[in-house]
Image (cartoon, rainbow, N blue to C red; front, side, top):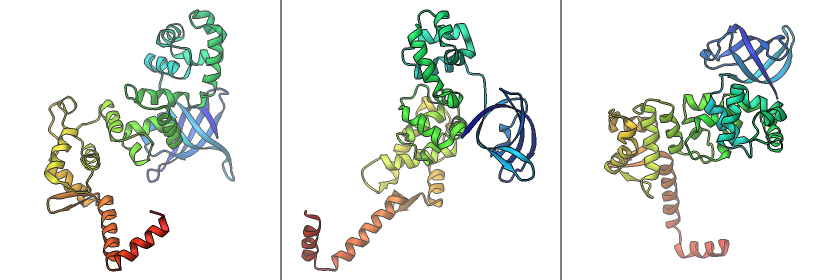
Length: 321
């Protein structure tokens, strides 16, 4: 896997259906122009004149020659002071916020690069840092150079939330250089991807922190399924109880800002039509748990038709219970 920092010179071709793109780039280090090919699902990511990080590998095309086939593409934006300070304090052991702020005061947006490549110079310019710590931090930053920008943006996405380091690593493994963009576009993709230690609360906090519509139908549906899983230890929940708990999880005035969410009936009917839930006699259950319960019930009925004492004796012998 190779990572290249380059400037997008021209979009030579883009196929709307499927998102296949042929792009002309200029390498930031050598200035050499090259062709990159890959899938870009959202064309608005492509802005001529902007800098990008591309991850992928070089391949020889029988007609068009050497091309860079990318599977990760991220548009670079200048890091803010907050992002730089957060990154330094996160990945540089021995650097606190005051020291990170002093480094930024001297080097601004080049702070991370300066500490990574010229630690002795930074230690001299910021005496409170110390040469030994600067050298150690330089090695740490070198080990993360390829994912530096996306890590800085992920830390910004999760700022203020109590998350483990593993969540950032898992997001990087799942979406690569596009991790922050994918999560900001739809924070609930972390639930669909099965990112460990990320539940509805974390994804929902990212949704709200990103300034997305708190009354959006997508959020209401996610909130309903979360409420159904957490409202009680029973598979089936009375519909009126589910409604009350759903509104509690959804309608905090500080979150909703006085806005009116969609009607509960509209949300629950959508979930039922998509076979996410089952309704019966004023009760509601998640489809997956309702099916599991039905399967267990069928097995018990089948077992009940046999000699029950014999079944228990066989079970004791087999499972030593």
